[in-house]
Length: 300
Image (cartoon, rainbow, N blue to C red; front, side, top):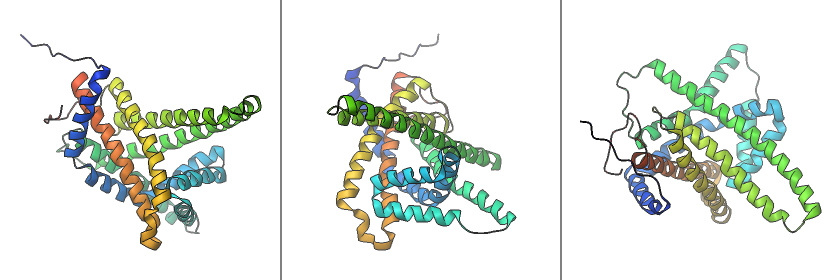
């Protein structure tokens, strides 16, 4: 007779033990090394990634507007000097006269480079979720993984477009509220901005957790893990902005300061992402049916 598996139901009082187990599993997976690897490939992928997103969203919203908004967001996160350096990097990538063949090869290299960060993020998530590597890995699998990574670039572009549209609507709504209740606008705008950022980042993390690794987990578990990760990410983004603004860690490295800032920002952000991935795995093992294709360890 088959023994039926008992699955607990999540209760709020379980959260402290979930966080403790998540931290243990997160620490055991050497997240600093994984984050450093992804950060390194993020540097290599950044020019191609930004050029594709700017041209994709810019075809609808306007290239100059999109580039200006991205520059503003980068300036808020990393500082004005880093934003100007990245803007120069984008302009140099987009300019230049070349033959048709060279242009085609350039686009291919651009796409391949832009997908690198997602490919290595996939490898890191596979390790965190204990996904057994496919012994029959071939070129077709690699191309599929790259195509999946490119799809995430398109998703980011779409979410960025939605974010711009919603931000414009909120700005118009703020103007109306300011004319009626001027003292409330500041709090209203702050709350809406937090909810908007958290919502869009939650969708992105949910898609990453669901489709990027070489496995599938239940949507219910995905949404819970994505929401926790998004809240931590938005809070972490705010704290990192304060840290980079006050400490200015890139100033020590002179001309290489921008590269160092990007490495630090991506690395710290990945630490949060990997913590959320660990939480998703721990939560799935405790309250769901586990993650298909993974092998167990002592942190359930």
